[in-house]
Length: 240
Ligand SMILES: NC(=O)c1ccc[n+]([C@@H]2O[C@H](COP(=O)([O-])OP(=O)(O)OC[C@H]3O[C@@H](n4cnc5c(N)ncnc54)[C@H](OP(=O)(O)O)[C@@H]3O)[C@@H](O)[C@H]2O)c1
Image (cartoon, rainbow, N blue to C red; front, top):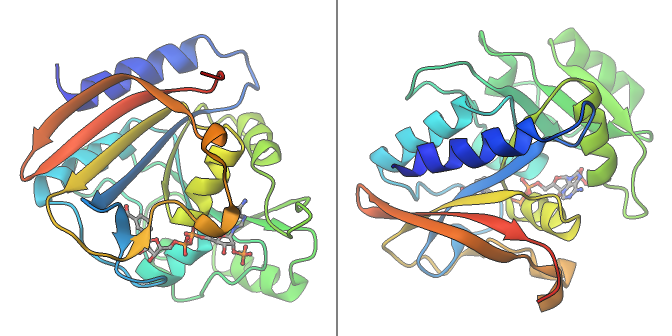
């Protein structure tokens, strides 16, 4: 069985046992270098995965109902978040953007994919909201945490109410760290490319997570895809 089928089985099991309005099943997926870098330096993109791994990522996107990134990734990479290197439906794009920094030129606003849901805070600028709505985006306002950012648990309830049962979180480091802190990750699918970068680490160290706040990984499955190693694992959040 391949890595995609493994990921799909765990996703199917996770969504089947879920009650209506239950939090979506969350897959965190990203590409890192051997030293755990996801970018060369903050805000700057870097192609890490091989073409075969990229195709796998797009197939993984196609089995999720929604895909989420932070505004930092939109500003750095201007991603499309589509399945254009695979077949299937484009997942619903969801962007965490508490201050509505979302740029009008973003590729996410041009095309046939679902219009992006931009999740923002109560305090975000109303006129910017109107501009982005005029460009086709849906704006979702949620209460912010004390640091002004979107509360991940509130977000998950909101997505469940909107009918989303599976969510792929692609980055960047701040968003992935927030999902870990909220214990909101069910499985990881990580592409490890065979080179060093010495760049932005996958974990946002400024969040100050303690070792006990990370999950243990279980049911680990790995596969070589092109020149990369792909690792899939479930999370176990119970104390060791
Ligand atoms: N290798 C890969 O697989 C991969 C994938 C994706 C991205 N990247 C790279 O990652 C880098 C971007 O990562 P990043 O960490 O700078 O940005 P990010 O995680 O994409 O976005 C972080 C921003 O999202 C907003 N946000 C709102 N609610 C949040 C919450 N609860 N938790 C965290 N953030 C929240 C914050 O901005 P506001 O306060 O303004 O809301 C925050 O600054 C880029 O260089 C990109 O190329 C790599």
